[in-house]
Length: 230
Ligand SMILES: *[C@@H]1O[C@H](CO)[C@@H](O)[C@H](O)[C@H]1NC(C)=O
Image (tube, rainbow, N blue to C red; front, side, top):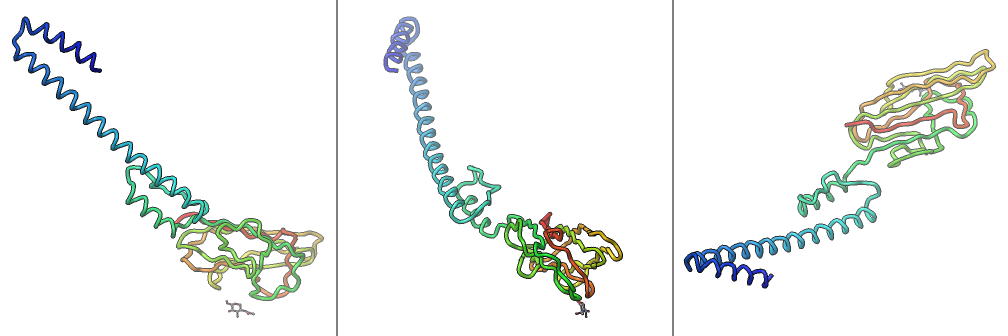
C-alpha cells in the first residue's frame, strides 16, 4: 500500500513539473479523503461483524432454549433484522403457542355388550395423541383453542346386533349414526366425518343413543380428530 502511494506521489510530483503545486496538493487531499472513506468502511464492517456475532450467539442460545423448553415449535419471525427485541417477544409468544392437535384411538377391547343409553364409547387404545387433548380414560376430546376441528368415527356391530350413536359437544347432541346387522351373519360398520366449530375447553365425545347395543372392538371401532383452523 505504502509503495503504491509512494509511486502515485512520484507520478504526481512528475506531473507537478507541468502543473502547479496547488494541483499536487489538491490531488493529495483527494487521496487523503479516499483513504479516510476506506477507513470508515473498515470501521463499519467491524461493527457489522460484531452485530452478526451477537445475532449468531442469540440464535444458538434460542436453539438451546427450543431443545430444553419446547418440543417442536419454530418461530415464524426469527429474522435477524428484528433482533433482539422481537426475537425475545417471539420467545414469549411461543410459550403460549398452540402447535396443533391430532389423535387416533380405537376400542381394542373385545365386544362391548349391552351398551347403556348415553354411555360414552371409550376408545381406550391410543395410536396417536399429539398434545394429549384426547383422554383415553373417559373418551373425551377437549378443544385446546377456539377453532374448527375434524372428527372421524368408525363403529362396527356384530351379527344379529345393532348400534346407534351420537356425537355430542358438551353433552349436546350434534348428529347420530347407526349400523344394523339384525338377522344377518355379518359384521357391519358405519363411519362419518364431522367438522365442528368448538370453543376452547368444549368437550366432544361419542355416546350410545339407546340401550342394548353391541360394539365390536379389536380396533374396528375408531375415533380420530384433528385441528383445521381458527
Ligand atoms: C340421555 O341424555 C339425554 C340428554 O343429554 C337426556 O335427556 C336423557 O334423559 C338421557 N337418558 C338416559 C337414559 O340417561
